[in-house]
Length: 84
Image (cartoon, rainbow, N blue to C red):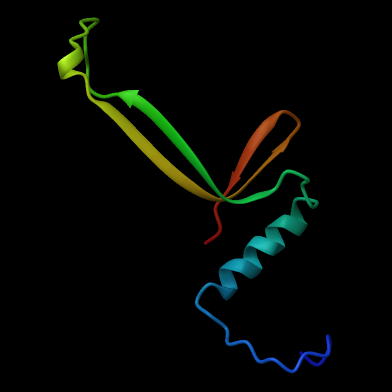
């Protein structure tokens, strides 16, 4: 606070360390332009083994969702970052 001239006191929450580590990763990877925090990835597929037989009333669609702490691309590859 003294360095930036602030008088407001902010209490350190439980996510402070997580945020600082994410910022450190952002710096480590060279400030990626397309860096996105809390990036959700969702995949949808029909579950089970159908053996090539499709019965519309018996086909269940399964959705899986993962939330990465950060995502960026480099050299044509997508990189997902998990901070823990």
